Each structure stands twice: as structure tokens, then as C-alpha cells.
Length: 104
Image 1 (cartoon, rainbow, N blue to C red):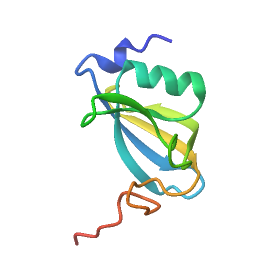
Image 2: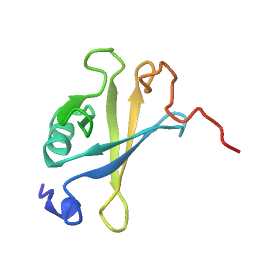
Image 3: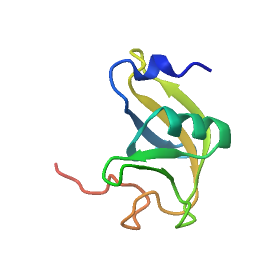
């Protein structure tokens, strides 16, 4: 698969991660070509850490893995929606989703 069309605008593409069974949005992270390739090859999510400047396999140290069910791109090919089977918490705070702070 040619991944170049997803990285025309930037070297990083936002990836929204959604739990397949509930539809709950779990997190937003960023992928580069290498992390997207590893995700497609392994069936588990890989991202690019902007703060650490390195690849990371979600759940590799915590055991809170994300098994990929489906990957969709948006109409402009500049955002991904990844549906997963989530094991444990998706958020580093221990919350199931990173979106737990209600503003309004």
C-alpha cells in the first residue's frame, strides 16, 4: 500500500482512536509513515510521540493494547479514524478514555 497520499500536507497525521464495541472516542495521537506501516503490519496501534520524538506501540509497557479492527481516512486523506478492541485503559492517567474532562 502506498502511504504517501496520507502525508502530502504533513509528516504527521492525526489518528482518532475509537472503541469498536461502544463507539467511544478513546484518544487522539499522531502517526508518521513508519508508525502507520507498523500498525498495518502488526494489527496493533503504533504512533509517533511528538514529545519523545520516537515511535511507540500503545500498551507495550502497560499491557493496555489496542487491537486494530478497521482504519478509515477522511475525505481529504489527512486524518485517520482507527477502531480498536481496547484492553484496559487508553489514557495514561488510568481513565478508559482520554476525553473525561467535561468543559460544558
